[in-house]
Image (cartoon, rainbow over all chains, first blue to last red; front, side, top):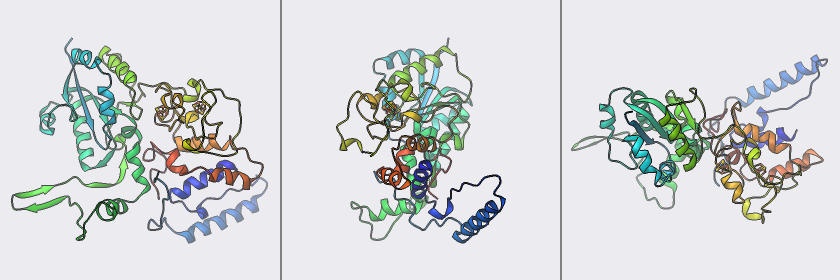
Length: 63
Length: 317
Ligand code: SF4
Ligand code: SF4
């Protein structure tokens, strides 16, 4: 979980927005949940579209 | 035995790698015993045309430092590859992009705008940018093309060996020169002038397994000279960095910034460090973890300080 939190901060600086990364626990018995999460997430990323490089990507590299 | 023919070149680099070669001090005379230097722009007056005139494979060993930032770097890399039997990516910039590789956090246009328009010391009301070709009465002038991304040497040519460090230490350089002169070369693709352990393995600071409630920048705390820096809340990259420098920074109470890169088998040093760092965060809840993690200033620039172009993501998207 902490790795995920830290990774998200790094990815944000690298211009990968919040909505493109998601962490879920789904057991092998939860087929319906898997399908639901995947459909939702695919749709979400589709709406975000390709990376928009005009958006202020990096807050990093100033130090 | 005939003398070795040695070349060195700097592409996108600070010059520190060249100075590091000079830092072998009086041994430079021993070097002159075993090798003839046939190209070294920082120290000797050879021209590209001299290199072009050499037969293919004429140079025995070329130590190439610097990242590939523009078309000139790529052109000379290809030329030296053709003329050298052994090509060494010398220093972290040549291997993973190094400090110049941090430019991959920005877009090409942003960089040009900053340098030629925005910076406080610039007056450029006509917004003139450098052109790759420009006509003057005397003929056409050319400048190298500034690439979109900083690349690693191995992105543009085949590389035989990799010698890490920002810069590689003089002791390691001398050791490597001796190996090269002896002719006992390691297998192709090997990392030379370093160990395959991590810096932590060679660090003498006391480790107690203490976790971290707050991260600091080095100037914010008085460092205990005996204890592990990471356990004191400094983002020391020792756990994911290859040993070989003699623990220079940690011996001087400074956290390792990771300049020797990852050990064999690790693809992405920054990602590995995320994992290492997350495991020392002392938090009971995700909110607390988030607060502690937020105390790390510029995580991406810290974890990929020397290796953004060589990492999995290569640049900011
Ligand atoms: S994290 Fe740094 S200070 Fe701590 S043991 Fe490793 S190299 Fe030494
Ligand atoms: S301690 Fe780390 S940053 Fe310092 S020289 Fe060694 S590898 Fe490089």
